[in-house]
Every structure is written in C-alpha cells, then in structure tokens.
Amino acid sequence: MPFALTADRERELNDILTRYPTRMAACIPLLHLCQEQNGWVSEEVVAFVAKTLDLTTSHVKGVATFYTLFNNEPVGKHQVWVCGTLPCALRGSGAVLKQCEKRLGIHAGQTTADGKVTLRTAECLASCGTAPMMQVDRDYHENLTPERVDEILTKLQS
Amino acid sequence: MISRCNHLSKIYGKPNGWSLDVYERECAGYQTARRVLSTMTKEQVVDEAKKANIRGRGGAGFPMGVKWSFMRPHPTKPAYLVINADEGEPGTHKDRTIMELNPHSVVEGCIIGCYGIGAHAAYIYVRDELHLSKARLWGAIKEARAKGYLGKNAFGGNYPVEVYVHTGAGAYICGEETSLLNSLEGRRGEPRFKPPFPAQSGAFGCPTTVNNLETIAIVPTAFAMGCEKFSAQSALHDIKDGGCRLFGVNGHVNKPQIVELAVGVTLRELIYDIGGGVLGGKGILGIIPGGSSTPILKPDEKVHAPDEKSPLHKWHGQLVLDVPLGVDTMRGVGTMLGTCCATVLAEGTCPVLAMQNLMAFYHHESCGQCTPCREGSAWLDWTLQKILDGKASMQELQNLHDIANNIMGNTICAFGEGTAMPALGFLQKFRPYFEQYVRGERTRKDATLTPV
Image 1 (cartoon, rainbow over the protein chains, first blue to last red):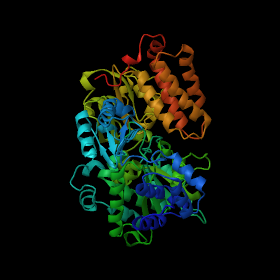
Image 2 (tube, one colour; image 1 turned 90 degrees about the vertical axis):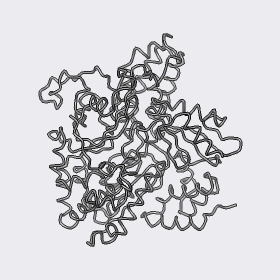
Image 3 (spheres, each protein chain N blue to C red; image 1 turned 90 degrees about the horizontal axis):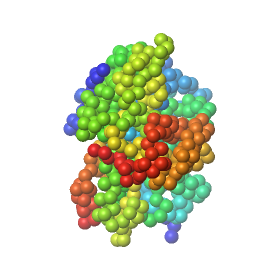
Image 4 (cartoon, rainbow over the protein chains, first blue to last red; image 1 turned 30 degrees about the vertical axis):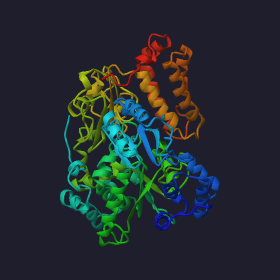
C-alpha cells in the first residue's frame, strides 16, 4: 500500500517546506517525519519522499542509507542506544551495556522477542561530562549505574 | 591562570534560564543585536568582530571575524549563515549546554552574524539525537519572533532575519562544514572539494559562512563588552586568541564538567583545579586535549621551542601541562586545541584498547567517499583488534604507521587527518605497549579502560 502522512504531519511538512529555497532540502526532515510514523524507512516511504519532493528514489534511498538514524528495517517500539565511545568507555559504559544485555536478554543490535525494545551501541552522543550514558527514544539518561539502568529498563518494559 | 567568566553560563541552572524573560532580565538580552542593527554598518560589524579574536570553537580555530570578512555580496544570490551544532567529536560536550541552557544567545548571535555577513537567514544544524537542544532552540526562535526580534522587520527596522533549526540524522562527518552543507541541502553528507570555499559557494550554491555554535553564541557578549575588551580577557590576547570560552574536562577525573573561563588556563589547572584531580588519586597516562582527533599528550612531555620567535618560547623546557591552552600554543606542542574539552586517561588505562575504541569510531563514521580513509580506518580498527587478540606480527604493527601515513593528505576533507594524527600519536607515544601485545607479554585480559 502506498505510504501517506497523517494530516498533522502533512501540515508539518508544509511548514518545513517554507524554510528552504529548494524542495530537496526537506529530504532529511521528511524522512524523519515518515520514520516517526512508520517506524522505519520502507520502500513505500522512499517512494513517497521521492514523489513529494520531486527527487529520484535512488537519491532518497542514498540519503536514507547514509545516516545511522534511519532504520532500513523494522525495529522495536523503543530504541535504547548505549554510548560506547572512549569518554563513556573510560567511565564504565561497558558495564552499562552488559547490564542492558543481561536485563533484556539480547545482544546489541537485536530486538526483544516481544518487539518492544531494540538495543544498540551509539557513537559519541555529546554527553562526555556526564558519562556513562544511554539514550532511550528521545531522552538522555546520564551518570548511569547498573542499578539506574535496571530502573529505566523496568519502566520501559512495563 | 584560571579566570572564571559567566557570560554564557550566567543563566545556566536558573529556573527557566532558557526563556526570553530570563535572558532579557539577566543578560540584557537582544539589546546588543538591536543596537548593532540600528547603529552600525555591516562593514563596521565585521571590523569590530575581527577585534574580538574569537578563534572558531569547532576545532580548527580559524578567526571568526576574518571568516566573516570573506563574504562578498553576490549580484543575484542571497547569502546564508549556517551554524554547526552537529556536536559529535568524542570528548566534546559543550555546545549542548548552550543550546539547552542559553539558547537565546545563539539566536541573538545569529542576528548579529547575519547582519554582518549580509545574510537574511541562518540555519542551525543540530544533530538529531539532541531533542532537548532542538526544542529549546525552536522555543527561543518562537519567543524572539513573537517579540519582533526576528522576521521581516527585525527590531522594527528594515533588515529581515530568519533563524531555522535543521536536523541531521546521525553522521559524525556532518560536522565537517561542506558535508554539513550537503546534508542541509538534502543530500548524503559527503564532503565537497575546496575550493570553492563556502564563502564563494556554500549552502544552495550561495555565499555562506559556517560558524560553530559556541562561536556565534559568544558574539552578543563580545559586542556588548566591546570586542577589543572582550579579547583582552584572554591571557593569549597578544597572539590573537581572545576572550573566554567553554572548557570541558571528562574521562578519569573526579569532577567532569563544563566551565566558562578566560582563554589561558593550563591543562594542569583544568584537570586538577577544575576537574578535581584524577580518580583514585592516580597518575595520568595521557590527555586528549580537545576531542578525539587531537593527538594525545603525555604528562611528562616538555615544550621544545628554543627559537625566540616561537610563540611558545616563553615555555621552553616546561611541561606541556603548564602551557596555556590556545589554538597556536597547542599546535606548537604537536597537538591541537580542538574543541577545548579534555579527556583524561588515568595510569593503568590500556592505550592500545583506547586507540582501538577510537579507531572503531572512525571506521564507523568514515563517509566512504575517499579510499584511503574508508579502507584505512577499517584496517586500523581490524589490525588493532588483532594486536589485542595476540594474533598480530611486528610487521602488522608497523603497517599501522603506513596505513595512517597513507591517509594523511590524501582525502577530500580533514576527517582523514583527524583519524591518522591521533593514531600516530598513540603509536609513537605508547609503542612499548603495542609490542608487548605482539610478543604475548600482555593479553586482552590485561586491557582495561576503567582502571579506577
């Protein structure tokens, strides 16, 4: 079935288009809008973005596959990103990731069987002064301890 | 010398410190932009900006005023101001504090910057993960527009200014300015050849200035104080490294944080006085002075500047820990000031594992456009893993030098150097550790990043 935006998001797209001198510039913002609705960038989403912005599907696909945050396959309802880059690693991000894996019963890169949580490692998320940290959906959780990780994941899974 | 300032950080932590109300009350918000737009010509703005000696806060340290002066009016094309807030350099956590806690300083800086370079629109490129930062910036823009500080008749005058937030989608390379411009235009974030430089052909093929977010955020302060006076706060004012900036310290220190200080603080002061010393009272293995692309320093390194004309001659023979942190002083000791956020590695940290962690980062983030970088970053990562696993030969250890040297100077953008320089730094300064792994005297079991 062809993809279409909800009316709210359609309005947001129209607002986005007023900001730039070209339609192409709305490519990344529109991909975000679509992913927010669809969970991932499917072939239908690619076709929709291409048609809406007068771009080729190869251009849109090229953009969608370039950026880490665009999912090229379906993912869990919630996204957990554990930063593992050096400043976080120096302060124990290894233990944070282990705790997440133990707690969720999956490895980084996998989704729980109930489809609820996808666990991934992230590259530096600009939170080096409050390391270790993880991002859950839109929220940053900083100065983490394994206990705190448990609390956050319990809330997420309930 | 530690000299604390509170220009940007004055409202950090205040209730609703990010609101227009607090910004106007506590920081005389938007009065400077109003004065600049109503009493100065754009030429005067650029001349004044040069006097502030604001060295770009994104890492390269290019003088902001000089960059503004490269902008020439184009007969048919508009000009743009683009703000780089793609903060993603490992070890860097300063811009986020401004966006979250003092977003109006960014908007006001954009108004002054736009006016100075002849632009009517500014795009703030924020990495997508920073949802709170984006929300605070949009909130500030909305408040400023409602008051008439933005729009067709900003401050009731006839100079239109608009500010927009644009988001990335998770790519470190988009912190490179031409890659950022491609990303802003809706393309893959692959760097462009220079020339043409952005001032000739930048966003949408139009004359563009790209400034780091902290750079633009401090502009209202500099103009409010008078740019000469602003610059003179710095201990390095004489070598044109002016004003104050946000300094960060992270890694193995007791109090990781961001502070606003006059330029001129030393690494020793940053680590011990600001950072509260090394965790567990340990010694220091090394310090990455300003983001992962800046080569690591060892605490026993000394300044070698016998030439009296060298800006570093004053510190000849002293420890690098006691040299004021500046763009040119750090270059003089073989590293870079970068983003001014230092990462401290305590004694007992395995430098091979630390290097592998960073090379895995560059491997993941290389955009893939240039072969030496795409392949080289991967081989650096893989070979280091092999060394850690005790499966590498001395020849393979030697190969790391060759791979890094083959990246240097052979790529479109500075990502290549940003990978190779820190790689060579680790290899040259910690060579015995690498050899111990190859000879089987150390194993992965001994390798830790958390010795305390």
